[in-house]
Length: 95
Image (cartoon, rainbow, N blue to C red; front, side, top):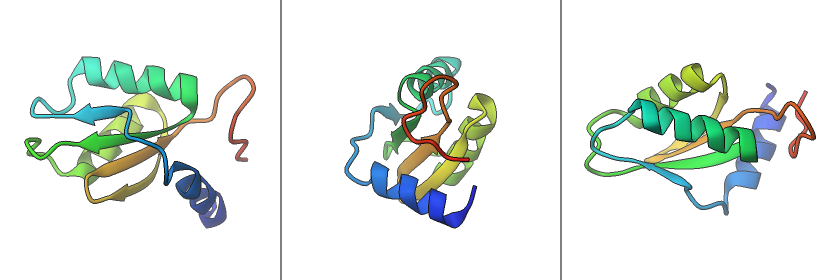
C-alpha cells in the first residue's frame, strides 16, 4: 500500500467514531471475531483502546492485523485504524 493510499484512508477515518473498544481483557477471541466481522461489513474501522488496557496499542494493532489479515492504517495515541478490502463491491477501492 502506498503512502497516498494510506493517507486517503486516514482521511476517511478521521471523523469516524470508534466502533469497538478494547478493554482490560485485551485481545480475546470474541474481540478478534468482532473486529473480523466489522472489517467484512465496513472495510475501514476505528478501534479504541481503553485506559485500563495494559498492552501497547501498536502491539494490539499488529496482532489484530495478523489475526484478521487486514492492514494497520494508523495508530495514534489509543486509536487504531484497520483496513481490509471487501471481496465484493469494495467501498474504498485500493490496489
